[in-house]
Image (cartoon, rainbow, N blue to C red):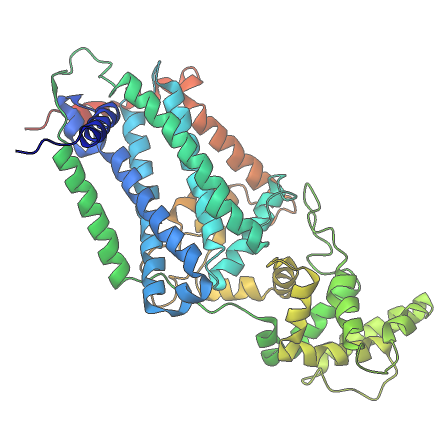
Length: 474
């Protein structure tokens, strides 16, 4: 009989040694219940997220929006997100109710709670990459939130490449690093024993077979849900569509950008993230680019050389023209330079050239200019209202599921943010983004540091729900 090679024996022994170090082999009798398998199930859904995320990143947006397989993989990715957040939340509740964060496990809570907070942030950057209306609306809403949280100079969801880098590389790296630290601490200290002396503490072998079966059931559920309930898709809003359907709205917005009265131009918060000149970006540069292949006079130069009172008269006449005309690209019999500029820009807007020029002004898949112009027209908020994406009360809980499709759900985990907006009346507050960012930041900090807060960390003992979790299986 041939003997196994020394190399094979060495590799087998190395794998066995590694498995021995990773696995829990002895557990309290309640340790085989599903309450204590939630960490493994969270890792299972995270593995699904990484696998599908790599495939989506490799194949690209066109594939996941148009190909049947791409749509399915995108749906698996979305349902994996739903599972990951739900399981993480349940895992945290089990740790909370059983006071498993007591010393020496306090840092394990800190690592786990930080992972949960990063996962919530990660989901929003992911939604911003889908390439549909939800991406537009959530990117615009998220940009205002990060500005209010004093991080707008560094985090801009309107910048696709930046959001892509954060979602695909930066946050996953931090989450995996924290996960390793979290698991090493849990593996070192073992499953937390009951702090009450009257709870049985029998030690039994860990049932790895049941653990893997639970993981397989979770994967099967995700795959089936993704097959029957696809990730929703609503076509993105385009400036050209608005110019075709409501030319007066686009023309009026162009005038607001010109005289610095738009939402972007007058944005007020704790910081001023939109530092670009709306007049230059949205009107002057596109207009002057349109003159490159023509011999016409530069109406902007003519306008600048007018007296101040004449400029105000021209602007007032242009607003009246934009509001009353049903064909804003028709050149009226006028010498008003502002109206002539509008008459030049509107055909560009209807053809899609205007949006392309904005994208060229801010290259590198940075859609800040385009999305801010859509936001200034208020078309994003209007369409979100028709889809029941009620940010006032439920955050992003409904996503696009307010239309015909009810599943999968949206970001139900952001319902507390909607509650904060309503409870503190932040939507009508000019500093609402700042206040929401500061309130949510304070809540997250309290959540992460909970084990270190005297008296508050005794709350789980008062609730007396731990015995239900500790009850030995029959």
